[in-house]
Image 1: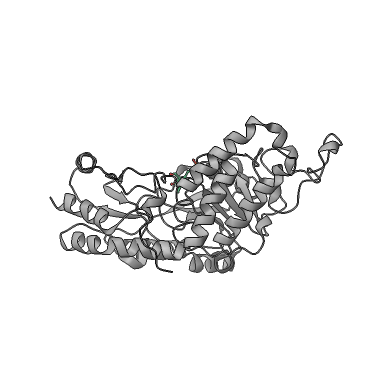
Image 2 (image 1 turned 30 degrees about the horizontal axis):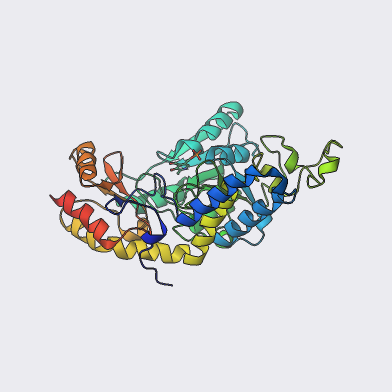
Length: 381
Ligand SMILES: Cc1ncc(COP(=O)(O)O)c(C=O)c1O
């Protein structure tokens, strides 16, 4: 499928050039409508049937499972945030003093703090892997990760693309290396799933954790997780009634049940049937499934390539395409003042983020080639 610009499906201001989906996506009009309907439903709670506590969640797990090429929607779980999903994972991994947890440099904090707590509790070590200085960044970073995986490695927890500059990691190679030493592979897919293809069956991570409000185009305070066989059936971080066996039997809820639901379902956040957020996220993921992440990635590549070529010819440093994503990439500006550049861009109604000494550009299907050319023009000025 080849996509054309989809800005008409969003309510973005006509004159705004929003290149900051990695910060927060704008809302699809269809998602907004679903949210309004969900909110109005509570005017008449008599119309909220008991099966609605389950149907919306079932739908959302199915659409997310389709997005990641999953085999069973019940391997997926609705979570509140990335920190919630990572805490669930860390709660179900036993470590000892000699074990290592490997992660990439400057990882997003929601995929750091739970590991820091676990490391302090067990005596395990956190090993942080960076790119090598003065070498091709993406290439050396990937190589360094592979070279750092040893028999001591018990967990590799990392993103598919780095949140700050879009460096892309070769998860298939990393999975092979972790399998060779029996280590868990945990992926924070927040900055990639939805806009970059992710195939659960190819990568087979032990967990995939995603916030909903960026590339899944959903609302805030809801996300999705996948848990592989090795992590299924463990201990959730909260004890909510709906995750216990036979919870659909409302009349029997106080026949307290000692067993959790099987597999991944026991890890879902309390009140996962949220009648506003759950259908909103389902609407946005259904839209992504009809566009496909592959077409979105190709669209972002097509609209950004001319500007990237021009900026690269003029001294701006942008990673080679094979080691970065096209929906999120960094433009390194050397010793120029990035904060000042950001203000100048905003004066032209162009919105990006600054991460370190790089401008983080993150387009999506609501952007055009003209949008990214306008950014490049402004930088070249
Ligand atoms: C890579 C990454 N993970 C997670 C999050 C959000 O985490 P949480 O849902 O815990 O707020 C962000 C937000 O910027 C992110 O960039």
